[in-house]
Structures are given as structure tokens and as C-alpha cells.
Image (cartoon, rainbow, N blue to C red; front, side):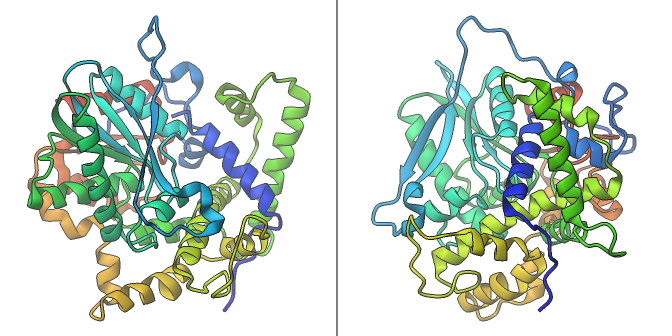
Length: 437
């Protein structure tokens, strides 16, 4: 089987992901015409996705005499077997910010590979805390801590399994919070894949009525998980043999190294990163390759973790016992060359068919698409959306699907890429209006 030769050095990819993740600290209701973002500087969707929001245009939080910070929490499942290599992931981790008195509680779910404490999650947690909510931030079910410590099946990328685990975790946390605070109601939100999870959680809860969510806010959701994942993978192809992703990654790393060496920076914060991005001269193909490489690295972590948890022999030979001294780079290198489409056909789908003999490829794909629950989304008034018309993970027909399905409950900005303008003042205010309307 042919594999696209993506990273020459996995370490350079890791640095790339770290820089892009740091940059993402950057962060109404009218479906027919998009909300305007005249002050948002990036008209290019790929620049918006990579560069985020300039510091001067970000939403400003309330000034507080005493700073507020999230409390880190964890839950362990008794007698759960965790692979030795993941000895530090025996508990599922999350964070909470609780009001002193009675308040509604909102769960916030991270996007693909996102940790509960990432910069995007910290921003959303503070945003909704200042709006009067108890807030609980949850890692994505595709994050390695989640897979090893909580996932019932030990495999990621199938939305119904993710939702089962999330629904269970949220009920455990609810019991813990209610023992310490009065809770007046429940809401749920998430960005990117976390938004898709939120929509399916709402549909699940409508049947089981454990939470009876007041509001469900979808931030930059994909419509179809498989479609979005294969879009990212398509950006890593080199059709003419002259624009390899590795060249784009090397250029990015070289420019960042030169910028950092000559800048005499006391620390690497979001403002420094934004200054760096302003010096970056990369065309659309190179920017798409950077975004695709970042997604591929996240997916490779998910694949490696699932493979080890199931001892499936996909990237790590079956019955190989990995311990803390085992070299992992060869396995990550193998996983980093796997397109999501290969992972789906060679690992995920066979596992689903092992569990359910009636499972088909068509059903598995449909289970991970918002189109499956379109009638529910169309008729449920407490589900709202804030997104961007130029989101590169959405095809034109997918934007129309969201507009037609959610109607006036969807707010679309004309530009901002994929989560690039999440911290932009107008976008943040749109999220607050949606969750408090």
C-alpha cells in the first residue's frame, strides 16, 4: 500500500503543532446574509486558520481584582487496565470553574486531539464563566488521555462511541459538582469535532432526558467527519512533485528559528507568535500543507494510542510490550504516514464490524455525519451555531446544509477560516448572545 511520505522529521512536526496550537490562542442570527467582520484582517481562509486573531482585536475579559483560574480534576475507573507506556494516563482529566452561588453549568468539549486545558478551551471556559456559568472543560475523545483512561472501546474516530463515553463522564461530573454547588440547569458546547459531539449529545439527551439541556452551541462544526478528515489529508499531496509538504514544514521551522533567534524574546507567548506570523510569507498551498500536517500529527497520536490500547498490531506489532524505556519514534513515524481514509478502512471499520456484524461502511460513515440527525437539528429550537462561511473544512453544500437546517439559529461570519476568529471580539459576542438568548 502506498503511503504519502510526509514528515522527514517527526520532531519538526511536533514543533509545528506546538506553534500552531499556541497561535490558536488567537482566536445574530441571519442565515441569508453573513455577519460582517470588517475589522478582522484575514480575507484568506487559510491565513485565518493558521494566524488566528491579532491581540488588539481579541475579546477583552472582565478585569478582576482576584484572578480566576480553572481547577484541574480527575476521575479514575476502578480496575481499569492502562498500558504501561501510558502509566501517566490512569485518570481522565478535566477542569472546572465554579461560581460561588447557584448557576447554570455548561460543558465545553474540545476539537480533534484537543486537551481540556488548551488555549482555545481556556478562552471558552473563561468566556462562559464570566457570563455566569459554572464551566467544565473536557478533552476531545480523540486525545490520548481520554482514550486510555475512559474510552469503553479504546478506539477513537467513531462518533457514537465518543458520545456514549462523553454522556457517561458528564453524568459523573454532574454528581460531583452538585455535591458542592447548586446547579440551575445544563448546557453543552464545543468547537470543531467537539461541536459535532455536542449535537449528537443533544439528540441522545432528548431521548434519555438526563440533562434536558437549556442550550446547545455548535462552534465551527464539521458536517461530515470523514469528509473533513479527507480534506485535510488531500492538502498533503504533492501533485506536481515540486511542492512537498516537507518543504513547507521545513520553511516554516526555518523561518521560526531565525525569527526567534533574532528577536530576543523573554518568553514565547501568543503575541510573539502573532508577530512571527506577520513575517511569514507562505502561499495557499504551503498554508494548507501546514494545516494538514498539524491534523496528521494529531491523528497519528490517536491511531497509536488506539492501537496500543487494543493490541491490534496496526502500527505496533501485536503482543509488543511497550514500557517507559521503549523507543516510540518508529511507531509515531509509521502512524504519521497514515491518511485518515486508510485508518478508517484498515482499522476502525474492521473493529466496528467485529463488534457489530451488521455494520457497513455506509452506516459507519453516516453515523459520523450531522445529516443523520438533520430532522432533530431542524426542529430543536435550543440548538444554535456560530461559524464562518469560509471555513475550509466545509464544502459549499455543507454550508448550505447548516443554513437550511438551523435557519435563523445559525450565525455565520463572512470570514475567519476554521476557528481562526474564535477570539475575535465580534465572534465571542456572537457566542455569548447565542448561549444567553
